[in-house]
Length: 400
Image 1 (cartoon, rainbow, N blue to C red):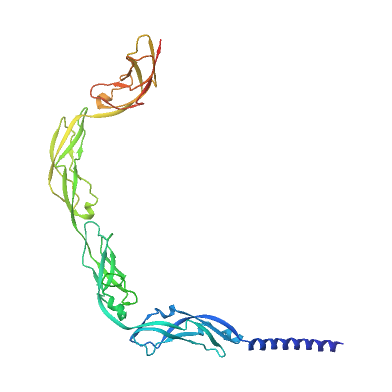
Image 2: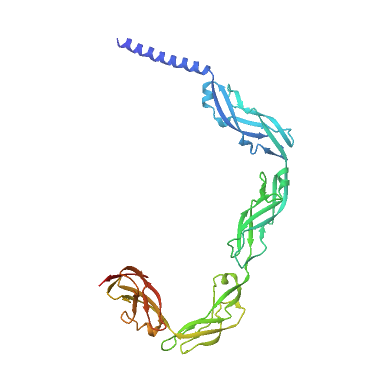
């Protein structure tokens, strides 16, 4: 029995092996198809010619449909499939239908279809020219900055490419933005091949691509008109104060480096001492100037006006009284206290209080009822009102 069971196992294994072998042979004999995309190459190009179109040739993708035995098709590496145009014997000019050749290293694999079958090719003669490097200065330099002649290293470049494009190149440009330049610049910048209108010319090579450039920056001398500001020091005695100081002339023209004058908004004088002044006086004084800055005048006259010093203050909760109340009527005011801001001579204002200041509204000629009125402050001579808050009050008259 054991012998019969082992024999049956052997027959089963042999049957499976035969079935697999027959399936493999059957599928291998039936061809299968596969599509791959291949970059187009250019071959046998004359050394003195260049491909203008397509540029680059690899920009053209060739779709190749392959057919063959399954093992070869499945294991085929798409990188081994080649598509190219044979440029031997083709001279400069346009060639509308150049056949695309597809090469396959695998046996028994055939090309059953390809797209496209041909391509449009334009060839041109390789040309070159030597051009000086030009530096194009963009923007406007800061005020007072002067830019010297730029230097490049090397001073020349070689432009190479199709003869038509090379002929269109008129300039080899380097662009530098001068809007923020304040010191010497040394760096390396790319060179742009440009036509007569300054527009870039594609399809050419520049050697070298990067060129060193040096810009020497000088700070120029500029002029500026600014107001003269008197510098008054010291405090007059007693209740006096400096009420104003006037320069003659009122303005001056300053000349100097742009970076210095850019921050100057006025020209102060040397100090004028008013510590012992009891009245108006004038002095001839110099201007205080930064180094390397000159002025259109050496001295100016400063007239100092001295008078009673002014002081402003706010008197709060000053009572408001109603005057001119008709006979037989009673009055009330809302609000009955206000805030009063006044200004006047220092010695007078300092003595003011809510009791020494009178604020009143008039009810003369009014009938019983309610009406708004503007308070009036009665102040010492020389003192005036700046603000009253609130500006109006409500007066209520009623029969007594």
